[in-house]
Amino acid sequence: MTDHLTAWDARAETVAANGVAKRMIPGAGASLVRVVVPAGVSAGRHSHEHEQFVQVISGSGFLETEQGRTPFAAGSVFHFPAGTWHAAAFETETVLVETNLVS
Image: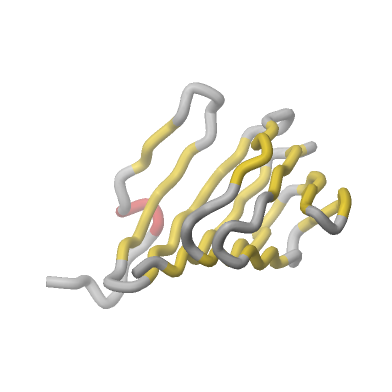
């Protein structure tokens, strides 16, 4: 049964070796992922097989795409169609919420 109301703190957390912490809420055609990225972490150039939207809740850094390198901060929203490469460098601890559209 699906919970119609949940809290991020109620979701299981995974922490990668670089300190990036994730909590996921899966759905049938999409997932939401809360990501906390420590200051100084970089995400190298990569792409996804699915469309992705990313909301920057807090923090700052730089996003790199085929359109160049652009600063981001709280309130920024990224949109990556499937297969679009991107990379990021996080200057401060950053909280993101990803919406991943999967089939």
